[in-house]
Image 1 (cartoon, one colour):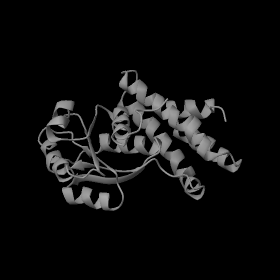
Image 2 (cartoon, one colour):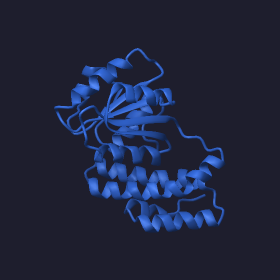
Image 3 (cartoon, helix red, strand yellow):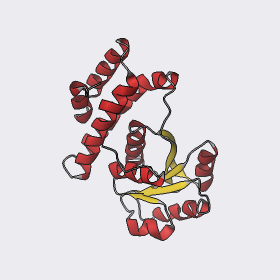
Image 4 (tube, helix red, strand yellow):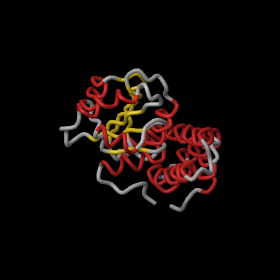
Length: 212
């Protein structure tokens, strides 16, 4: 299957209604949705992430593309499950205790889903027990988000909690987080932005960075 240029453009430009129409038409025509996901949809969302990292698009544009992608995932998700398509891995994500901001966290969650991961979104104001429960449900990577300097230290007890678990990786990110802070608290990975967070998660799992 070659790239579906119309669907690619609709995802890149965040045209949610067009994406939904094209994906539904593909489903109605019995197209291979796994190939559609891997050949067109995931690479298109990755392109937006690359543009965001390069400063060519900004949060509103990236959020529109991510929401368009989520609409497509909603349509093909049941078919992927029925076909036996397995996610790359299960990841949980949440804003840490005391932090009620969720725009960045939501964007990363959508990008993760669009990149082939199963995501357990824990919401905001998450405590260590919330992340532990998600790991009990199968999460292999714990993603922590913080927007405020006053809440970023809440990442520390979570990182400490999982520091002796070889089967669980901790990735941190957010406006006030740096590589230095991630190293200081013993996190396994750091994402500079939503696109970079996908790379960090993949690397923690021993996969290559954003493929393609």
